[in-house]
Length: 327
Ligand SMILES: Nc1ncnc2c1ncn2[C@@H]1O[C@H](COP(=O)(O)OP(=O)(O)O)[C@@H](O)[C@H]1O
Ligand SMILES: [Mg+2]
Image (cartoon, rainbow, N blue to C red):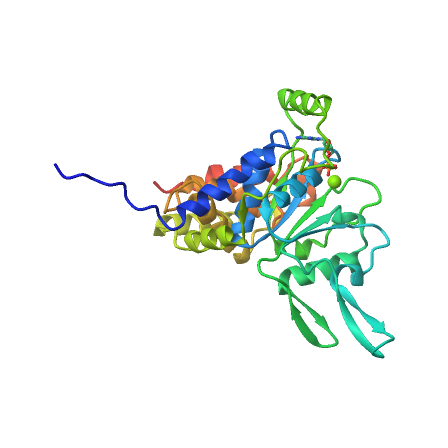
């Protein structure tokens, strides 16, 4: 009898395992919110930006800080305030008296992972400076472009726009975010877990003490990204993505449907998710799972629908229920 040795590990299996450990690592500080962590990892794999929305106090900031501490990447946090200026985001020219010349001082966007915290507390001009670099991945100084590091991913947090004293992001630019992830309130059990941790001495400001260390890095993300790009998509599944997006454009509840850019985002996110779960092909369920976070910020409700209390997610659910699923 010949001995059958185990097949050699696929080159991307180590990257998947490393990224899988992120969940446990983030869990050392954040109770629950698994779907949010998964969404953030998908975005990192796609090098896509994320908008995290949730009421104050559901650990949006803590979650991103912990994810960053679990990754071997450069991270900067920028708290958006009413008086923040565009130069505070991108950087500015500083006069150096010794050399009698202007020098560029890099702003916080020169990093791998930018936490743009409470982005809707800053006026439109400063928001626009961030949205522009998110798209172009460079900062122009006196006509000279300076490239941002690779990867460069922004995770922006915002409170739901009903909150007073906030500036909603310009709708036309929202599709610069790959995903919009809603951060829900915890379940009763999870909230009990949060209290137990705090009662036991957990300090959210001291992630080191909580034992959070880097378990994955840029190389894992690059390997995962390359592997996700190779994930197969059968023609009926590709058509399904297109048909879902087209259906949003004719929905009677929407005045603006998803753009082709939205369709490409859904495809990329579904491929990354398929790879993360260990498959080398996309299923219709992968597409369904990513449809809401990739499309919810790219469609606009008709005012009548909004008045009736219809939500974007409900409309997307209806679209998912109507468009035939390929088998
Ligand atoms: N799911 C959770 N797991 C652990 N701590 C939590 C959780 N939800 C809330 N907390 C606690 O509440 C605090 C508020 O979190 P924070 O990140 O500032 O919220 P947000 O940015 O959403 O306003 C955290 O620092 C932590 O002490
Ligand atoms: Mg916060």
